[in-house]
Structures are given as C-alpha cells and as structure tokens.
Image 1: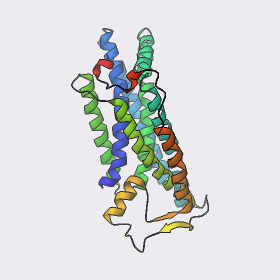
Image 2: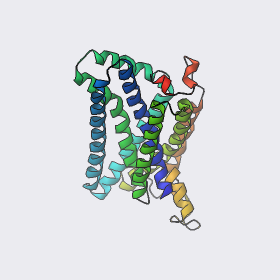
Image 3: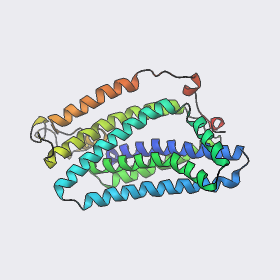
Image 4: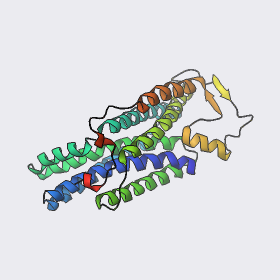
Length: 285
C-alpha cells in the first residue's frame, strides 16, 4: 500500500503546499493592510475552489464507472495523457514563477481590496482552483494504476495534512523552508512519476484497441518475476514499470523522461538571487 500511496502523497504535499502558500500570502497581505475583517472572503474562495476540485474528481469517477470496458480504457488513457501534460506544465511553471508568486498575488490582492467582496472571493478562488483541479486529475489517474485502492486516498490526505502543517509553520514564523529547493526536488520526482503515468495511459489506449501494438512486448519477465510480489508492486506503484510492458509504453516512457528531465535540470535564468533563498513567513508579509 505504501508504494501506491507515495505518488499521491507527493502530489498532495506539493500541490497542497503551493495552494497553502497562496492562501498564506493573501491572508498575510490582508493583515498587513489592516483588513483582517475580509479574511472570510479569502476562505470562501478557497472553499469554492475545493468544492470545484472535489466535484471534478467525482465527475471523473462517475463517468469512468458508467462507460463500457473498452471506453473506460480509452477514457483512462486520455485522462492519463492530460494529467501528464498538466503536471509537466505545473513543475516548469513553478520553477519559473516561484520567485514572483508572492508579488503577483499581492498586486492582485491590492486591486481586489478596492473592489467588491465578490472580487476578493474570486481572487482567492482563481489562485487555488488551478492547483486543486490539477491535483484532482493527477490523483484520479494515479488511483487507476494502484493495486491497493485505498493507498492513493490515504497518501493524498497525508500529503495535504503535512502541507497544511508546513504552511501553518511558515505563516506563524515557526518554520523556515527552502521552497525553491523543495519544489525542485519534488518536481524531479513528479517528472519520473509522470513518465510512468504516460506509459500506463498508452497501455490503456492499446488495451482498448484505439492504438495498436498491445501484444508487442519490449519485455515479458512474468516467468521470472511475480507481478504480485512486494518488490514488483513497489516499482509499479512508484514508477509504473511492470514485469511486462509493450514497446509503445517503454518508448513513450523514455521519449518523455529524457528530454523533460534534461530541460528541467538545466540551470534556469533567475532574475534575482532571492529566488533561491530560504523562504519564511517574512516573505509572506
């Protein structure tokens, strides 16, 4: 179960921390402006974004459950490809935007403070909804690959809970965390996990018949490795590499992982050295 929970834990932790930082910045900016009385509008926007994300996950689950078997494979495969696209975009966006995220949000909040309550709610909603929708899609996709169905849910809840504790510590200045390094390391791991999700999605499309080559295997080690053994499940749960894989899934895995990892690890041009500094609550206020 731990191997199935790890990808969901990581996405819950990373996206939860990202969304939590957004909320912390908004609340800290309100406090600095002497407008704590409007914090309820921020929480209303956060609640609306959470409700939208949960509704999206429910729609995905309901839609998949009421499709014929082959259509389920097509749906799962397409959603896996979308999840990989969103996660890849997210890790690169966070790599570039981490330095300016606080300033951008404060500028939007300054404009919202002079507007209606609805505009302030929308500012919080828009800031959190993106992370929530990405999280819902990726968690739903990883849950489809899990051997133990309770694992992804437990991992996601644990990751979000840890993110909430970290955000509390940052907001109350009880904790310092090098967020640039944190997001870089978790982004590296997520790229590896996304490569496995891509391989899973391609296999689903092959199994449905939408894409050919389902019986053309790059390797078939099932005679030597038990797919249900703990070591096989650990590798499958974290990397989505299984004892039997098609050529298309292997080629897709490598063709995605190699160039994406190259560009991700390539040094980025930072406008200011502060982007790599340890971030504490002083940056939120």
